[in-house]
Image (cartoon, rainbow, N blue to C red; front, top):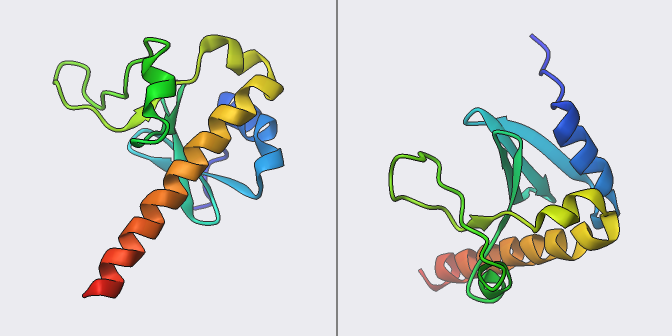
Amino acid sequence: MPARPPSEYVATLCEMMAPLGDLRARRMFGGYGLSIDGLTFALVAEEILYFKADDVNRGSFADLGLEPFRPMPDKPTTLSYYPPPDSALDDRDELLPWARSGFEAALRAAAKKAAKVKRR
């Protein structure tokens, strides 16, 4: 059975973020994971976009009062993925820095993971 194409919303997001590289959308957990070069840097859940965050870029999201992704809204568990400001969803030039920030967080996480493996 061929893979279902991404939703129109996800396809639009991919078009907006195309300048970042070869972006892939993969269905996962009822939503989508967005990746470049095999690194997941964004999630789309219930038609809401979230970018990966870490200690370097989390403050940019928190300073705007943006809340982390809750996979189960009735539970306190959060993932380190945050939505960009609503205004960024209508403006590629505003969205790209947020997306780049998420991709850079994914690169840092991959480098950290590789360093751990190397030490073993």
